[in-house]
Amino acid sequence: QVVSWGESTFIQGGINVINPIDVSKLRIAGSELKEAFLPIDMVWTSFSFGENFSIEALYMFEFEQIDIDPAGTYFSTNDIAALGGEFVMLNFGLVDEPANFAACPGILANPAIPATDLSRVSCSAAVPRSPDRFADDDGQYGVALRYFSPELNNTEFGLYFLNYHSRVPVLSGTAVTNSNANSGRYFAEYPEDIRLYGLSFNTTLESAGVAVQGEISYRDNVPLQIDDVELLFSALSPLNALIPQPGNRFISQLGTFGVGEEVRGWERHELSQFQMTFTKVFGPNNFLGADQIAAVAEVGATKVWDLPDAAVLRYQGDGTDTTGGPDALTGALRNPQTQVGGFATSFSWGYRSAVRADYNNAFGTAFTLSPRVAFNHDVNGTTPGPGGNFIEDRKSLTFGVEANYLNQWSADVSYTRFFGAGIFNLISDRDFVSMNAKYSF
Image 1: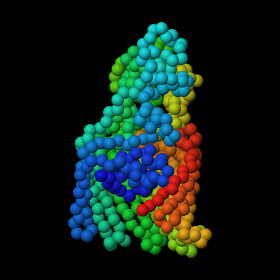
Image 2: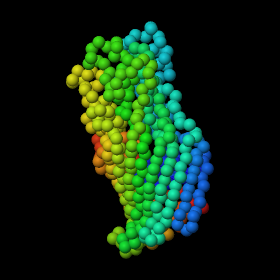
Image 3: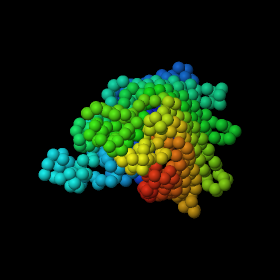
Image 4: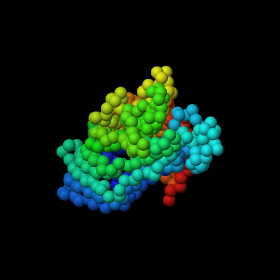
C-alpha cells in the first residue's frame, strides 16, 4: 500500500515518510510524483467518530529503502552509496580510479607489480564497499488523529506519531587492518526506530481565495551523516603508528581508531521541519488573459537543535571534497586544501514555487495550451544529510508548455536549468530538456 500523511507539496522530509520513493522514476519524462512512491506491505485501518473526528493506524511488515540515482547515471551525485557503487577513492582526485576494480585484490597481492605501477597506485587508493546493513522488517508503526472544525473556517487538523526505520542510507566504515588503505572498508546502513511527531492543518482564506496548508514535524533521534572525509581519515588513523612525521598523519575530528575497529559515521540528533503551502487560482479576466491561472508557493525550514559547531564536528554537505581541518600549507599534507564553508548548518530554509496558465481553445482550435514556470531557491543554510532539502543559494528554474487535445492526447516540453551555490551545487551542470506525449482512454 501507499499511505500519505501530512500536507507537503514540494518539500520532502516532513511527515510523509511512510513510503520510500524510487528517485529514478522522477527522471522519466512525463512522470508524476505518485508514480515514484514504492508500495510496502502494511495493514492500515481508519475509524470515524461522528462527522468531525477520525483516527488512522498502520503497521508495516517490511522495510524498503529509497532508490537513489544509480552510480554513473546522469543525475547521480554519489557513486559511493548508490546502486553500483563499489569503492571510494582517497587522495582527493590526485589518483585515477582503477580501470578494473575487480582485479585489485590480485594486483595488490602480486609482489611482482612495483609500488610505482599505476594499477597498484590506483588500487591502493580505492577503499572497497562492504555489504549494506539493512533495517529489520518489523518495528514500524504509526497513528494519525484528524479533526475537522467547521467553527474555525472549515479547518482540518492532523496529529501524527510514527516509528520507522531510515529510508535513506548513512555511511560508516571499518578501520584498516594493515599498511594498505585498501584493507579498510565502508558500508551503507539504515538506522532503526526513528520517532516522528507531527502536526498539520489545511484551510482556506476565503476573503483572499487562498488555500493554506502546513505542517511541523519533530524527530528526537534522527541519524545525520558526519562529513565523509572525517570518516575516511578516522578509518585510516591506525596507519599513524607507521608515520613518524606528524604532518603526514591522518587527523580526524572523530579521533583515532584501532586496527579493524568499526567507525560509525553518523550521530542521532533532534530535528524539526516546518513548511507552509499557499495555493491561489485566478479565474478568467486575469492579468495574463488566461482562462485560469494556478499559483503554488511552499516555504520550508529545517532546524537541528543539538548540532555541534563545525569546529567540534563537521557534518556532511554536498561539495565538501576535503576536510575543514589544517591543509598542506600548514604542514598537514593529507589534506590538500582546507574546505571553507559548505558543511551542514543547524538552520536552513528555502522555498518552491510554480505558476501554470490554461488557455482553452487556443488560437481557435480544440487544443488547450498550458504554459508554466517553476522556481526553487534554497535561501540560507545547508541541511545535514542524508537527503537534506536545502543547500545555500542553490536554485533551479523550469519553463514548460503542455498542449492538450480534448483530454485525450497531450504533449509536453520543458527546460530545466540548475544554478547557484558554486561548487556545492553538484547538479549545476545537469540542465536538461524533457519531452513526452500521452494518450488517455
